[in-house]
Image (cartoon, rainbow over the protein chains, first blue to last red):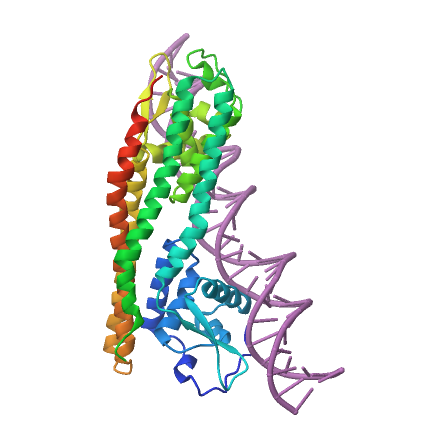
Length: 185
Length: 185
DNA sequence: CATGCAGTTCAAAACGACTTGAACTATAGG
DNA sequence: CCTATAGTTCAAGTCGTTTTGAACTGCATG
């Protein structure tokens, strides 16, 4: 956690503690990303890398954001898996460095697809099971079964809304996020 | 928690413990609603009331779902406030009874509007603050400011996506949910 | 105005999600 | 092969949220 010493002049601005404005921006992105159902610190790591615009080592991230070694490792693994952070081998250095991909929305889409749709599928399966059970019990009124069927519409509707959401975000937000790709430095 | 005794023949089916299929369906709705950012038990209470299709007392809900007295009171207060559960005075009885409104989506819209939009507004305010601070510091490179501006697009985009989502869910899903209003009992 | 039941409140307990940190594995250099 | 450093894993701890349950309020009745 401490005992980290940096003899590296290679990335000088990586060494200074985050400026106020930087910390504010990093936390704002963290909050947004948490809102989307991810971990706050996943957003913070991405934001740090994006703002610095240089590849940082895990140890630097650890220090800048005040996170633990293990935590940074896990966060980077997730971000890498989702394709929003790239792991690059630095030339003069034994350790990996990480840089931000610019399409953060990729992350949202990826995980929503993986996680949320399978969740909804599970819900629908449960509701179908409930309906089958109810139908096979003669003492259950028809109207109950009808209501169960309508509940399945809840799952359908949720899934449909999700799809719509992803689609529109891809079109609408996606082009916006494309802007992240280049800036006039 | 216990000690509840019901001399009421008025709602006989409210007295029997939940059937398997009923419990499955109730939990499925609970999970879905939790996915939308509410409490699981808010969804379970609504689902119970919807499936039974009779107005239940708080004590009955408590027993059916295995919740505490205080918890049921708070859950019903929220559901009532959101307009998805109605409190009705039963004729022969001293206590209130509760019945499900059919438009569950009302709940999602209400809370997303109240809670999520104000959250995004806050995020944007933070990012603007960060940008102001960065701009007023001459040692901060222009490119950093540009990146901060682009981050504000993240908030804009999220808000825009939310609005779109609400609008489409109102149109698309909303009509679906209208179906909940009547069934052929 | 005492009693009993319905309903509310809130401090504390239970719970779950996230993070930590120490032990471990992998890898590069001497 | 030995050592040092980077990176991973996971049991245990922390922290925020949800639930409980006991005390309390309100109200109707005898």
